[in-house]
Length: 251
Ligand code: MN
Image (cartoon, rainbow, N blue to C red; front, side, top):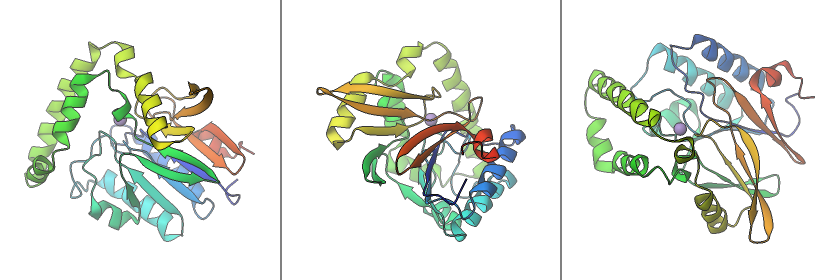
């Protein structure tokens, strides 16, 4: 139950008005957190799509208000951008009271160093995707895009998602998963034995053999079908379904 020392990680909620039951689940989850946890980390793709900090639909406002309420109650909320909400900016951080994190972020998790990523940067076998990502991350292009009318941005992003769904349907499962070599690279580069990410929608706790030792790679679940939360306490790491967490059966 909230009240103990615990830090939570979620990702890939893909919240939007098309799945009102997930919005309701998010509201319940947020209500349960109030005042009881050390920190909530959202590792990207909170939104189905975020078109810029002026993308204030009723749905988005509901999510923002829930986050603002949580942070106003003293809970730290950290947000790492995903490939669906890479346009989240400073204004979003300000109105929610959350802190934006870079694409690679190291934290001290009760004495253990952990690397946080959304996860798409690890899917290096998907070279088409990585090329597209580099394009979308060009600052001048984002600057330009964000100055277009919101309706235009919505239309363009919806056409692009149609296109990307069609492309992805033709790709193998392996190509769209993380590259094992990239996982090893990043663990070495940051000198950690714990990596937490989402994006692939393949929730699991993997053991990775590295340099004669072992590291842990934890993949968070998506909220399409396997909504989950990683619950970290000083001595345990557990993946729970959101429903179980809300019910408090974690105790
Ligand atoms: Mn993603």
